[in-house]
Image 1: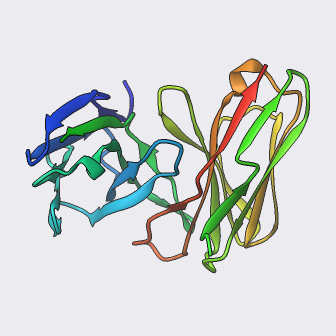
Image 2 (image 1 turned 120 degrees about the vertical axis):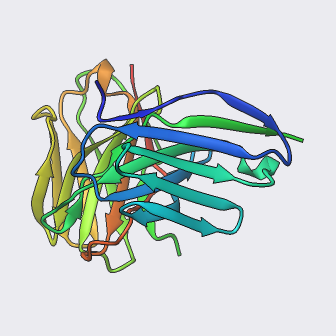
Length: 113
Length: 113
């Protein structure tokens, strides 16, 4: 079993829809939870960063962490075609001044105009 | 003014050759990383350096050797390239404090023929 499981999709929704992306994990030591967005031929860019359980909102994006269920989510409201990308969840436990990020496989999202 | 830059962007080479990828960051970060992304978009950590000291060394063949001449640079040298080494290699950096996400470069797409 992988440490982090993420449905690779692909996921295709119409513009304006609410998108829900999810990951589950098995390592209870993870403390930091992130969502990265990756456009084709580009590096991952950080979207949301949370520490421990709870919700965090940033514009149209909301990240949720439920440590008791080992489950994290990213919600995108009023989705736009420019949101079309691969979304990667990542989580880590800190080691000696570095973060050993463990990534999910990524969900490929397409927003149709 | 790219934060994390990698060269070359594309690398096509034959099996058995030796090649290097270079990475530089101008963010003043202490920690740098190499990640490998396979054809299924799965990102996995290979190495991490903190202030030129190797602190994360995942199960990677000895043919891969990172080198950090200073804290702003982390290079990756690969000996005796194999077909299975074909992937996108991402460099990343982060500051030393715990609530700090990684900043990724745009990757080097390596194709071994």
